[in-house]
Length: 260
Figure 1 (cartoon, rainbow, N blue to C red):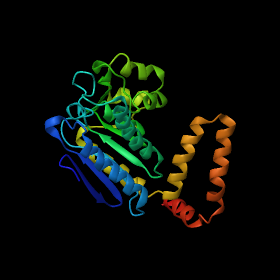
Figure 2 (cartoon, rainbow, N blue to C red):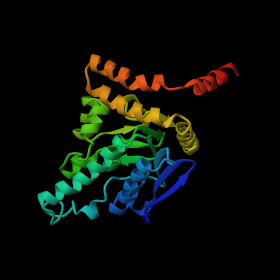
Figure 3 (cartoon, helix red, strand yellow):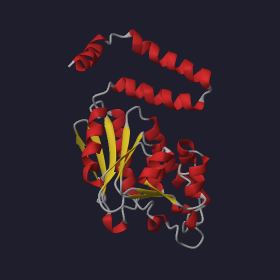
């Protein structure tokens, strides 16, 4: 737990809320540690089915806490060596990689401007939900660097070269609807119903079979990196044990709902 990030578990959903309004939710090491712990719990605890990362205040996040990193000092990150700098970036990469690797859904709910590290974090999550007030940007270019914790690689993978250049080279931003068109955001809802819509979505995720969600997450990532035939083979391999088990109760439940 951090002064600026709180954690609660409810109905099988681990909830991390960023709440540092005076710094526009700029992410410091303590806040990152809360997210890291929540991801580890999601991975290890059977009672947790979904992780929801959200924020309070005007901003989702203004990005990394530049004062803490020392980026504004002469010579870059203060007295940090190149080895220190790479180690710092590695911690961000490890967190985002673990979010991608955990075999359960991770949802990020963005209610306002989401910049820099926030975009990088969002890019690693499975589901990116935005309110109409959300705005996305990578202002790293104005600091003389690129988005180096997945903001370049993940954004390009998710949205393509053109949109990645729009944010990383031109320093432009995307509003929520444009981000949805670009493929970064999967759903956009009005501000006044946003929290309720997010919660309903997370609750629905907990009703789906966990083992199939995990298999789907792995299969989707693998299929993206393979050619067409390899991807088809992944589908066959993954689905064979799922089809051979007894799914009769679940099928009957689904069919019963349709008949009703």
